[in-house]
Image 1 (cartoon, helix red, strand yellow):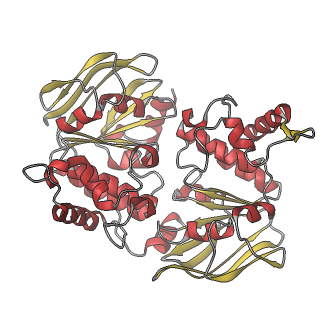
Image 2 (cartoon, rainbow, N blue to C red):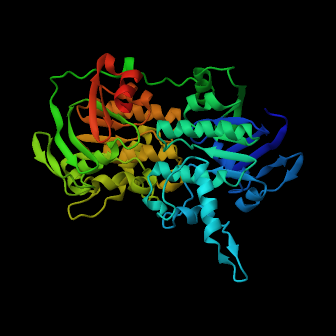
Length: 500
């Protein structure tokens, strides 16, 4: 139970050039309390928490801990104050092992030469992984782990340090339903032990379930604060985005006729120990959803179809022509586009600006007779997509790494819309994206299908799959268990096939 405010942030202000990102924000958190912090991308949530964790400095305001004013000049100072932050963008070092990442900066040493104490470092690492029930080899390099396991590792190495205040910025984004449930349960355990948690998430169901209070931010300001069970999901959404109209299945989808032309067909695709007997078709103007739990093989299937991995056997037909792609370049030329699950490592070109990230998929359209790049053409095309998808930026010459996650995702989708793909595959298209940006992305998916093209949406969010899809293919253990349509597209039926 909350006893008193152990931490307060008073009148926090922060600007970058002339852009105000925080305007007199005041929040407080009690001992053993979970506070949900919500708002659209760009609302100021992450900036506020970066100030608290020492990653950036405010222009004005003060931080009070246990009744005393403190200065958090760096992440090291925050750690000394027992404030820990698990950021949305992981801070792990891919080239180091799991154990090295866990003990980094806290290595146990022994003897006059201060040699590493292998036994104690191993025990500490195992204890850290136990906090989140993570079971991976300590000597494997982190870059070899799945995104979900990397996320759990990031959380584990913070939990083992017994923070008084734990900040979780979108911690369940890369997790499966089972892993997310385990993390939410762990949050309740930490709360019972007196740990205070600030929980940032775009998944309102999670926020409403575990938070004692919810603080809503919009455009750099705190616009509301409510207690658990005092508001509905719709109330929170309205506080976050105002009166914006929302995408709905009933008004925005048209149900594709079974006689519509098949734009893509897969027949008995197999990759040893990954997927087998995969057969499905995609019709012109259709949105085909793919759902499955961790290890189902959805992403692996489409990575192979796209030519980034091999396929052992099976046949594919695209637009009436047999195909087998040996590389993504071949797939792109044939009219297949893929928005990957991990935009940070396999999606964006972080040091390029927005306009070149968009143009990258179809340089021919912005080139002259002799292959010279027409800069004005790139600017014109990118500006039209920035406007069309509502990318929040000061200029299309801004580096994409400086955009919020949701706006980076919009740029990636713009890239593939620019490629003029016949089939567009979107793997977790709204991962880490706020509810307002989701609506913009949903509308673009719908518009793409209205043009008579085919869309595949791979998503771990049941609600998203049910909202967008004309049909849903459910995978388990590398196989398609069922392809559902009509009234069978409901949570109970989908989970029946996904979980077995």
